[in-house]
Length: 626
Ligand code: GCB
Image (cartoon, rainbow, N blue to C red; front, side):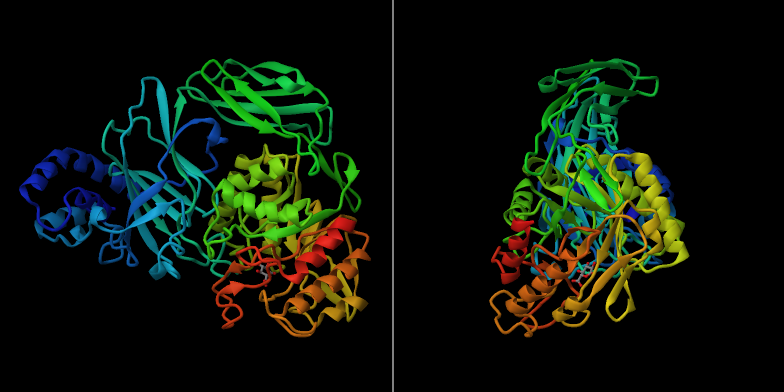
């Protein structure tokens, strides 16, 4: 912690010598330092993590973005944080450092060091950071005139994986989890001039984290989504939920939550196109519910109707665009707006196209990826294996794609660790908080391919209960596994199937499991009377490699695998959707095969540049006829 302060101080007085100008600054900063040290050393013990308390719909607020170039320090040994005993530095160490004239932690200079662009992962910005996993410090300066009776928040769309954030030398707190937003209020801490934010972003993998050490995607590190200053009135609309009442297409229902000192107040919900102008009184806690009888034009992928919604308080107007639809199941059917639907899907990783990998974060990235899904004649996307950025959900709302949204509870999570559970629950809460007003989102997924055990059952059941408590209008699912009960019969009987509404099932018949022709004799069973989505199937092909249908990595092999799998799934009446693996080739350090993979998972239907492999046309034809 103290080390960090030196980092900050040194940023002002770059280099080792304390020249006279620096000495002057040192004196000016002494009082601040003392206070800072006190706060930092408290912070040392309590690097508080923010839990699901982020305001939603940030694009409707008064914001200043802090995107662009940030100064950085690459710190693989975390020298700016830990002392030489690998303890977060203490006050004592600070004093000793001065007494002993140990200026080792002055060996930094943000302002003469390198820069990275925010938002953006570091791996794809610098060749030398391609496989880097560790700490990078970021620093950005800004001025801000905060008017009287206004509040200011520092908001991060996402930092992968572990973030600690300081403003003007003062620890604001931390956040764990690389795919959901967090914020800190800085109303009383912001200066008019020369504020400096320092972020320690650390993407080291560890066993008890969510996700755990072992995944099949690139561990892109850094400040991967936008950073905003958000200015609000003293009392503001922090959160709201406006959807159709569960399974009722004639009632628009929900709640609004105000934050601030004017909690009980009369507010208004306007949906002019529907003739809605509903006044409600929020209670002492700032919370108000409503139910309005109305029959909106329903949101469908073919007609993604969105209404302009306004929440009007005494202090502000928050605008959103919201679609209305119901989603439910009946035996093995999925019902969208009361009608049975087959989910014509594709799985997608949050990786930008046309740039050789890198995290996607912008509306343009979303438009390309989801535009390809539309072009493939999909009505559904599985946004795997973690929470994608908000632009993906908003674009799906606008262009008409149903969404499976997911948290990174993937493979071998530490089921017996309560902290791991709390972390997963926090990421789930942050995802649902952010995206619950998106009509496109129909499924909250709890996990992917997790091995069966009692502890895992308890862990996932707790998550499902939490998801239902936060949002009772969506369906709960998970991507599970199947097993053989004889040579030609697949069984889906995962005990977690009892808890979910829709069973997801991954199956790689013809790739990891035999040849594609194996599909011909395969039959499927499940012990549950619930719909199944084949949440993954597929195989690898390098675009432009040709051979016969038995030549691995050829487009022909992959196309044939799709033909055989589709023919098999068509015969199974409880399969109500598929989301093959995957839309675009994606980067993965697990995938070594030279000249074929070169650290790319090649199961994409298109390349990074959008070149379509033969299997694309097989799937599209199936979807067009379905
Ligand atoms: C899976 C995983 C997915 C992998 C995929 C593959 O079952 O869920 O994350 O990328 O297989 O390509 O092997």
